[in-house]
Length: 412
Picture (cartoon, rainbow, N blue to C red):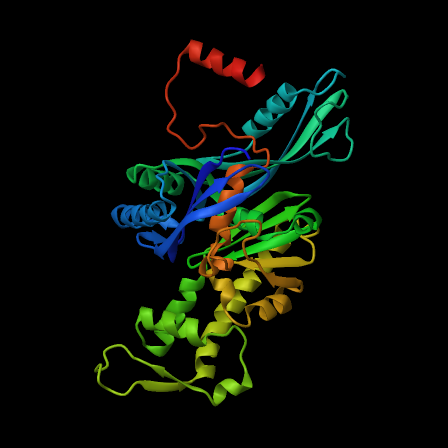
């Protein structure tokens, strides 16, 4: 047996903050040894809006997971939802002179392609090679050892707003933790919840969080497109709070206990209690038919799914997205959502849960924890990303000797 390696994941969401600590023994074997999740604070739509509150919530979640795992961690793979992540496809081709393709050739091509991405005050998050071509041939996942005159690559580049990334990194650094990698949420969820055939044949993963709904299209084993919609489960809760004149916490409880994405005729006869704002605690609660609650929830869910469909249609990869949609995130647990998504998106829909990871408790094995589980999968296999190892660390000034040393490390 190989020596186990400790890896840690931190999912920073608008509703909850989740930390998984696991052991990896190679060959994709991951066993969770410590886990913690708690209510989020200082995070809105995936972005840090209160540094102090977010720092305390993150520190608390990590400390609880460390206590359960019986170990201390210093670096994390962290999810990113805020900062409006955007993806673009970049292609690059170079002449290799007809010899055998070496690791050095592949690395140089990837770095050249990465440098072509138009960032414009944005931070590079992912640079995922989708496939390579030799002398214009169909894409191959690994060209090393083959012969040809030209080597080309198609790469998916994902970037996010500098300010959102820096605030998140600074917040984690204030917790005395190092960010090993940032991973956009739907990409991580796809690594955890999709089976190999779904990633190869074309599938859209839709991560339904509290502050945002994000999506990623997988094809031929790689993420070829990502997008985010600034609407999530918290907006449904706010609609309920305003529509029924009740507190946010009670609206969240009503959504969890009685919410349904599809209206039903039987809802007319079922009555539910609503504690309205400002009422005397001893007064009898106001009663409404359950259909009233469904009438508030359904339009917002329909709007969100319509936006997902529109974004897919405009993405340019709709033809590769296949006929399969996998829903993850806490919002995916709402009854009726799967059926409604199937109607609006006109695709086969299933609810995604973490796969290929052992040690998860029943409470942490649902769709709401797919992103955190996927971060662990990314930690053991970054799928050939073409990013510098220090991409998410402060850049230091280096002299000529340092730059020469870096060039030799890259090319020899």
